[in-house]
Length: 378
Ligand SMILES: Cc1cc2nc3c(=O)[nH]c(=O)nc-3n(C[C@H](O)[C@H](O)[C@H](O)COP(=O)(O)OP(=O)(O)OC[C@H]3O[C@@H](n4cnc5c(N)ncnc54)[C@H](O)[C@@H]3O)c2cc1C
Picture (spheres, rainbow, N blue to C red):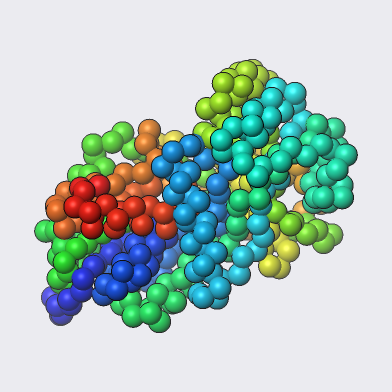
């Protein structure tokens, strides 16, 4: 072992969760070292949509953390040189059963500032939305979109400029609480935060073993519309009303989910719903699908990509498109939204198990340090 380093906090993992904890610790005036086994972040945090979601998340902690995180993204982004690509979401609805869910959501506590927009207004308000045959759309102003593939490295660079030390390309092999070690460094800290993401069998895994965690594999594409189109907001559609818990938990969603099970078994079996967001060069990141298992295979199915593209063309005025790239991403999933565990008094293990780390990471980190400083275990 080459070196011993000292810090107030050592964070393991430089995905959005690790970076959010490093940021929160810096805000509290603490010295921070972040260690990641890879030379740069290549995990879920750069494979996602960069879609910082609020509407559609389950009520309670996850929703509160998403609101905190969205506000923090808006504060951090300009300082770290991260452009906000667009704000808000259009969720297009064709089926009356789905419209009932949209109406119920708009009237719920979480529906504040959310609007039900009839189809005839969509051409002027949202030319990117394909209103043909639609009843209307649910508009939420709450979301923001960042380009994760550049935003995550920019966030790390900005934290580095604030004094956070990064050690890349070293796997943390062991820990006894505040102290962690790699094969080259021993980092002695007052506290450690382990954010290992999808690695369910490595460091911190004792905390994860207590939950019935599996992995969800998603297929994603970057596509370029052949004629220019501008997305002023993310585009989703009625499939999400039976998938995102904030909608799907409403009593009105039961009939809609049953309808989809009967009439769209292929889409349901592949766990498909549409999220489409735009990048600065006009290309779109679209997805996604969900396949579950502890060891998902790495192969993307063409049939699934085709269904995602169909949903895009049904929901947005994109016309013909070219596929620029395809990839697979994985996130942990469980019956709780986030594991926060304290295997030692001076250590926290934090893993998002809802596929919403970009949306909730900053809020989770704030809760973790608030509770820790208050003497609460988690
Ligand atoms: C395709 C896809 C789309 C998604 N879309 C969205 C979205 O639009 N909005 C949203 O909110 N969420 C989305 N998510 C979920 C979100 O991306 C994740 O919840 C989030 O990225 C998790 O962040 P993380 O830091 O925990 O994990 P990761 O990004 O996986 O980072 C974990 C890091 O820990 C490191 N590590 C692990 N073990 C060790 C060790 N022993 N030593 C050193 N380093 C270690 C890894 O190398 C890795 O860099 C999506 C996920 C996927 C896969």
